[in-house]
Image (cartoon, rainbow, N blue to C red):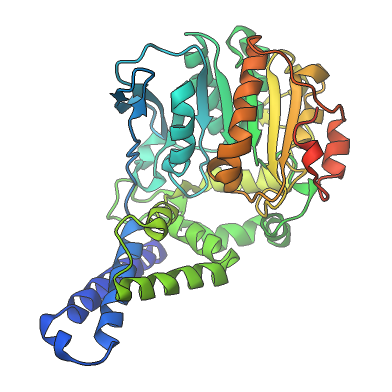
Length: 439
């Protein structure tokens, strides 16, 4: 608990130092001094204050209105559909628009950032679908009395959310990054327990289905460190300032430190450039830098049991990759998935979930006919780009929507190059445009 409070105190102090430097450097009398020192001090303070303040703020959705066919704006309302202690099922209701037949559940990652990380993904899908999302809560705000939350609880949350939506009609599930293995497990559970509530299609984007398929810095770290070392190094106890006082968590600030360390040079240059832009007067409150880092720096804590069970069971134990995953003692057989169409999306330059890790899902779904499987490898795309960047907007989003329509029987099947999932994974190191969509 002392470590947790010390880390929060350091963040708070840095925010205060930035605010003080901004105020001091902006003092009117210093404008007479013929040196740039005070402008640089104020600029450093402004960037520092904003950066450290954002670490403790949950971002708003701030979704733009949807333009209807009649040219009118349709306001988007964020409305919880199901409320749970560790996360809500949220609906983005478009005012004065009839419910659309294409319905999508976005499964957001619980990996240190809020669901708002998928804001641009939501905005891009809203004109063409009813969109729902899993809005996970910050573990430090959840009282200890609510109990534990691990990968099995996460999977059960997903089965409940999917079942609730499927009761109103067909639903398509899109799982982004970390939740892809658990979304696959939830689908297999529903195939066994309530096949009538299965999602029509399941799209897995950049997820670690088989982390051993290709090594990354993330998997190398997981293999180097033992579970005991990991628990000792990163697990902390929430301090008295928060509602979840006493809960064991993997702090969001610790996760953010790891993220930044992976690309330290890039982040250092970005902040240095922003300080000079602020000093020149070129920076604005919502310029490209601030829009990105307002989201990137906003972090949340994960429960210790969720983080440790993810590392231990998904990455180290490879339970999903070897079809040995269990929920509440019940085996989850991925071969039971026979009716849900499954598509995987990977980025050729993804350094978090490398090509080959996600496409492994297709071979694990051994009971699914080949015509209901698809994979897309995006040349030149990194991890973020495959769900929120240029690659998503221009190439991946249209393919995902086409796949959903094909699963619904409302679109003629595309001509696709036929290939086994193992062949696709084996050739992931040398992507080519001709392999954009293959089964």
